[in-house]
Length: 369
Ligand SMILES: Nc1nc2c(ncn2[C@@H]2O[C@H](COP(=O)(O)OP(=O)(O)OP(=O)(O)O)[C@@H](O)[C@H]2O)c(=O)[nH]1
Ligand SMILES: [Mg+2]
Ligand SMILES: [Zn+2]
Image (cartoon, rainbow, N blue to C red):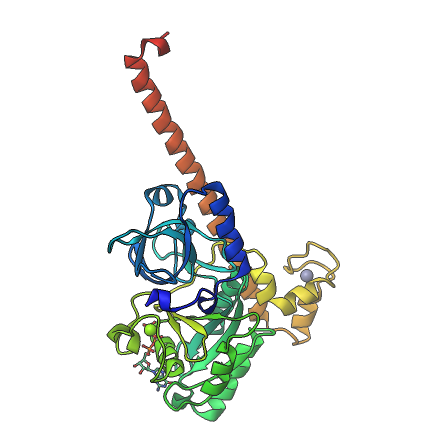
């Protein structure tokens, strides 16, 4: 399995190699090897590129890493292999070329890594339902922020009248400036050649990933691309065949050599940060904003607002600006919350240290006084 694939074929880049060399220079006595995470199975992960099929974080990594510092599908990790059938020990996650992050479902809403070292994300929606431009905007902002490129894929065109499809594509193109919108059908095969063209490994793309709501057909598209004589890093199980909802993030090798990650459907993709993702996702508004009278114009009724003028002229939908404002607020709230939880955690740590100190004082006469 793993060792049958060369590192380059698995998407190993000079920046990953440089990260590994850096680690090796700090611990020359530890025989660190690079491996790629091809599936997540709870805390353990499946590896390719090394002899060990499985790996798990070292105690130190588990202890020190933040949630985003633990291995996720697509990651390159530095491991040591054990002699027997024991899982390899993952010492460090190598520097990532991209990382898609979302706010986890639930009340705490911590940041959660979805996939790493992806060059191109296919944001999949279905033509029959779930075709919601507002949701696509959110995915686009997250993907731009990850450092990867997005393409919007509209699947199940077989379930849609041509006129209805044209309207849908128009609506999606309006909220995805500069991003290709590809209509496809995993069932009829329509559009699959164009989709496959985008997965063909070339200079800046070796790993692609499918994301989107559950049931839009991500696994069906992955399977269509894999074809029958696909070389796979992993055998495809029932779950990945599209009969059931996908339950884990998993990386496959296409016959073309492209690396494809399938992910379970996401009910929501909450934004946690904005490192330029919103500016890229709302590029037409960004471009107009440069002509607003005030450099810090919020486009909320200020005089000389070029965005408001474009909306009045019917060149930009008012809903686009409303969506941008909503996502900006969401990022602000998420950041405030994470600042609060960082503060709470350091307070907790300070308290624990204090308690330990007081306890020690009772038994250590040197500390008394
Ligand atoms: N009509 C039609 N149905 C499709 C198409 N692609 C997928 N489906 C069906 O849609 C359902 C969901 O497909 P999946 O590929 O499992 O969807 P998914 O996005 O992987 O779903 P999760 O794994 O839950 O995230 C299945 O019943 C598929 O047969 C298509 O192009 N046309
Ligand atoms: Mg699936
Ligand atoms: Zn303005």
